[in-house]
Image (cartoon, rainbow, N blue to C red; front, side, top):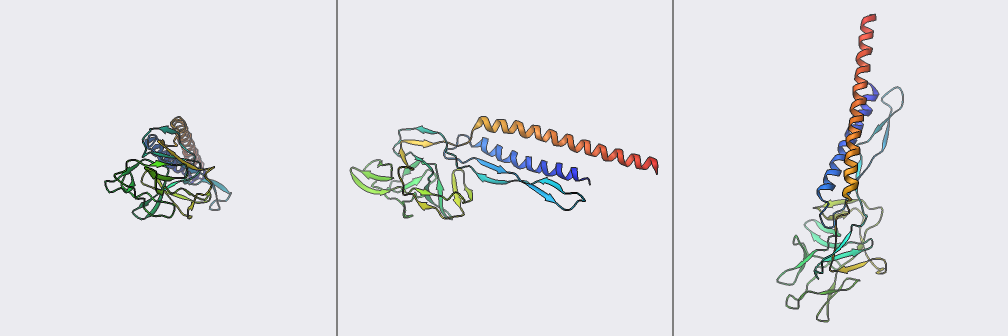
Length: 241
């Protein structure tokens, strides 16, 4: 097979990977705290042909850390995170970090995510409130009070920039490097009565869909031209034999 066909096929694989991520992003444009998925493409140099040939890799996916827009809800059990930090909850396989600050309080006073996972303080312990004292007041540093009594604090954590994030459910992430408690509350903090929306930009994603379609068309044209050239070469050789 001609090297150009291999290159074209590698390009199609890359575009398919990109299409999957864009479709997933578009489907979650209204999911609170959702982190958009991006793809980083690279060139691979092959020595399988006489001349060096550059191929496009299928792409490595990563989660965007860009903050999403914040909307006001005035619900005391809704919080948004200001700055580059994360809330934490106890997932089924360990600690999960999230920017989705929609919370609920159980009849027993446990503070949980909407899906029922316990939210954690800075020490990694579940947060227990007084179920008879009403909704808590939450300060910028996460400190929670009910009727003037301190009841604990929401944990805020920072994840190193070099950490690779894997997705948990829709809005949670699990880093491959340990997160650390946030210490500088001038740079990060809690906003009570707000929620952070998805960081997906619908307009950008639709534009990418159009670009992907055009790229597919270009690659298909390149494959057709390559096949036509190969067929003509075979026919010419046959006629001169």
